[in-house]
Image (tube, rainbow, N blue to C red; front, side):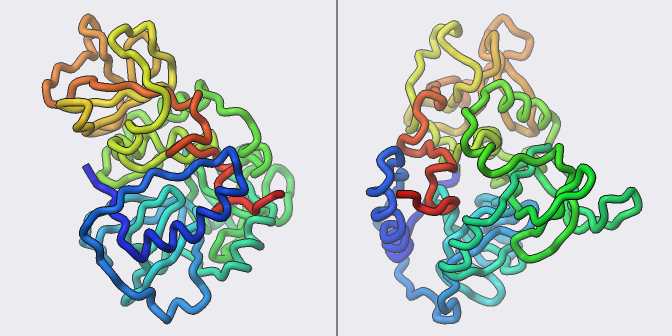
Length: 343
């Protein structure tokens, strides 16, 4: 399992941003952070100037452990994800994600912004792409060129509309057209109550997509990335790794299947102290997860989809929906990186 490491300077940057804002927002509690004893001290690169913010500009961008393409993939971000920039080196930027993860991102995958720029973006007419996949095209007509691909959860600005299409602008300034039926306005997305059945439909549409260590999109995902992607479709930001996700939410007695509800998270491992896998409960003992590829298995020993594995046995279950805006479970509408503070 990946383990979140927050070095001293990164930790200070995060605290300096979150503490004042969270004090103003009663419903938003602090993220869980693990500060390791091994502190990697550094000075933020002076070349960043006043552009300490970024927006992910590709449909899916990779974040790696070290600043090189051959390095381990630790996570991904989708278009329109706000990022805190920490340092720069040879075409790579060290970034921090909204849930507190950090790693290195190819500079071509984001748009660098000042604090004023990011505040302006928060006030624009944003929309969210809600289909599993799609495209921005240079024309709403049949004969058109692709400007960019899109995946579920991508965020862009709508400038105009024309016969069933929105004219949109990506964070890096590319413009084109997207089908209106595949989009939802920022206000509708962030203000609607989470719909577990809609979320589970998203996961079912991902069945067959490949497992990817560090993946967090509908293109390819790891186990905790599937969970994070599913809940983000309902405008909920979860922590990145299964071991982190297992610490949050309402504890559910999983020894009786009848206690489980659709959308509950099932955690697997050799023991509750060592979580190595997570899935999302569906119904009647079945759950969906990414292991090799996204597929459905069962915790019912009488079900043909039941898998016996002593190293990956069910050891915990958590209910997310009853713990919104608690530690590690934050609705996008209350996340200060996405929204302006409203007194």
